[in-house]
Structures are given as C-alpha cells and as structure tokens.
Length: 219
Image 1 (spheres, rainbow, N blue to C red):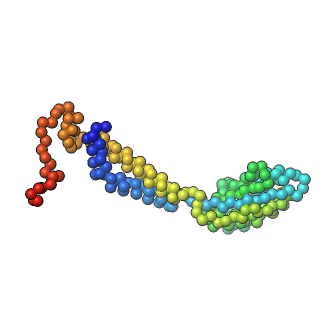
Image 2 (cartoon, one colour; image 1 turned 180 degrees about the vertical axis):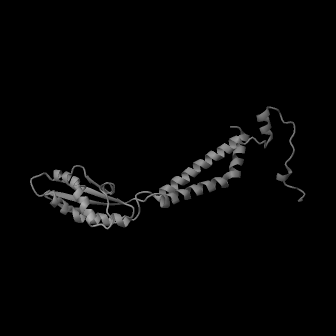
Image 3 (tube, one colour; image 1 turned 90 degrees about the vertical axis):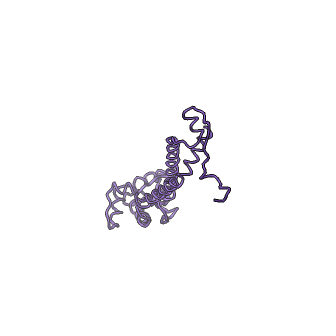
C-alpha cells in the first residue's frame, strides 16, 4: 500500500468515525432491547433429589426408575391438580427435565419457566409430590432433597449483557467494512501522488493550499 493510500484511508476514518461510532452504539442498544423485550425469557430452577431403595432392588436402579416415574402421567396429573392454569403433557415435558446423575442415586430436576417465581413455585410443588407419585406406583423408594431449589435472579436465556456485547461487536464489524468500502470506492484526487498513480504522468508544479497554510502577516 502506497503512502497516499494510507493518507486516504486516514482521511476516510477521520471523516466517518462518528458515523461508525453511532452504528456501534445503535447495534449495542438493539442487542439489549432484543434480549429484554424481543425474546422469551427462560428462568431455570434446579434441585437435586437422592433416591434410596426400600426393598432389595439396587438403589441406582431405583433412581433410574424414579426418573421415568417423575415424568409420568401421574406426576403431570398431580401437578395440574394443584395449579390454577392447566398444562398439557407436552408442555410439562418442555418445562420439566429430570436426569440421573452419572448412574448414581442422585437425580437432578430442572424447571424452565418464563418467570422466576413460576419456576421456583413449580419446583417446590414438584418436591411435595414426588413421594406421593412413587407410592402411587408402589415403587418402594424414599426420597431426600440434597439441594433445595433457589429462585433464580436472572434468566439463563437471553443474557442481556451477552446480547449487548454481540450487538456492539456486530456494529464494529459493520463499521470497519463500511469504512473499507468507502475507502476503496473513493476516487477523488487529493494529492499530486494520486495523479501520478492514477494516470501515470509526472506532476510539473503544484499550487499551495492557502487555506491550510499559516498567514505569516497575521491576516
């Protein structure tokens, strides 16, 4: 890249940096607004439950069975009996996730709702019902809560900070690309070197730019 091209790039940045800054700020604001008002929030409450067998069945097998029973129709029916607004089985399957931890007696239950209070209240109700459901199925197992649920303070998705950073980063990329496009499309003649590079002819003389020179007489 020749010296005059560097100069032209510098002029492009100098003349357009305010626009680039506005683009970055607007994209960051857009990311924040999208995260807070444009997407469905997901609040997740998690609890750990320890399953102990009360017969000769190995405890880990009881835990595996409990995973199935805790997402069974009887569990969903028991939940709906205690809720003002009823959920379908398909909706509850999306809200409630139950998994066995590394083939142990420990089970993790997660509750994904649109508000933190709904998520927390549903987890509490769930813990009240699990022993009842096991007994209804005659599962011969007892439960103990290892990690009590805590009401989430912020959604797991979307993260407004992350969306703001991503928006600002996207704005920066767009600004850089825009400046490069403006620079490459700029075919104005701003110096004698531009004439030589563009037309391949030597410059014999050059007029002084009086606007940029100091008036030594003080005028």
